[in-house]
Image (cartoon, rainbow, N blue to C red; front, side):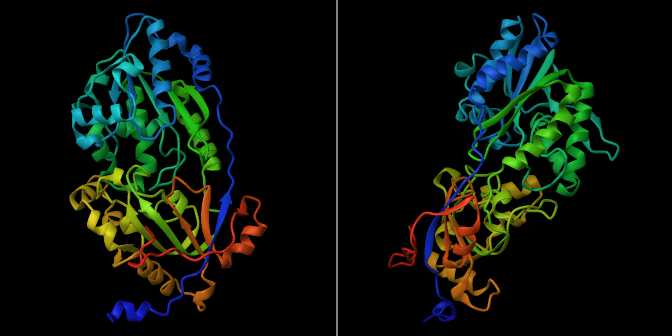
Length: 420
């Protein structure tokens, strides 16, 4: 018997019960119609013949194709000539072709939205902040008669401020391409809450941004609100939309968790592999919220992530299966771009799922391992149904958002000690 097996052989693994979590599911029933009505209020910003760049680019935005297509048609009906500019910082391999491909993967094709996609990584420098940080914008957008920005407003995963992810971040980082993303990250997330709005305000002062389309999504990633913002109102309204987004955010309804098991991480789930707003584990000390987790285990990486295991270092334990699937260069590139390298570290790696889970239980700093407060989730996108250990069932019974959905059962490990 090896030393690890010897240390873990007597660590008990608890039984689990399925638990349903309920969230506010309020959504906008007619996204296209509501957006059309909102756009009527900014008709005066558009003149016939105007070349208008529409900045599009965030992943996972609900109804992105519809939002873009409705905006394109609105501008065309007023005699303008809109075109799409990929606005995603350094994503897509920081190449023009790669960024166009990312848009097409999101469904934003020239056919789907009836507008040309003009993709370039060329930028122009439009100024500097007082601390010397340069501010860039996509060259093609800078040459347009007007710029429109479409994005979802949501909490960031690495910093907190009145404005986090949303319209102003799209202006400062998305439209700034690779150089803009690099500049905004240069001094780290500690200062991001001031740099994002400062860069965006400079861009809005110097560039013809005519309006923005902002959405807020509910806990099920469906549009709960859509709003068209004039440039002079972007900062104040985005601050309010950010508050709404945080209220609607899905969550685990537990303040303290001894062990959190996450079956899979991946870039298709979150840029961080798993959403820190759900796990309570953040890649920087400049964000907060969510449960206090003593030990966290990640078991696998999704096929769609293509080996990018960014986020594995945020966990305490992982498996050899995950590490064997890692594209280390692709994973490390994340840290080199964001300057945050903790999530790209490889956490303590165990031969199988059972040993990884036992390791977390052994080290979670409780006296009686049979009473471990354990939660297991598939990933941070799918938390409407979760699994919890027996020690949490009293809490489940008392919580209005939680409902026990099964009797207790054993972990289903195979003969190799894995769950799948």
